[in-house]
Length: 63
Image 1 (cartoon, rainbow, N blue to C red):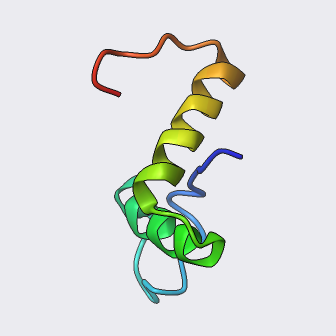
Image 2 (cartoon, rainbow, N blue to C red; image 1 turned 90 degrees about the horizontal axis):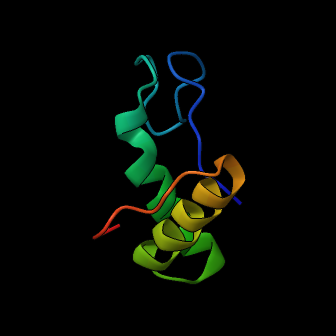
């Protein structure tokens, strides 16, 4: 699983009548983590790891 944005289209329901932006991803992460009953930090770590593997990106120190 990776998190992505449809920016600038399709703003999340929590932001009606606003333009979508990648800055909303932490809120999406928090909502999804709550549904999965895990911490947002754990979800962020897992999805970052998945994105790096999917796109063959190197992990940066501190990520």
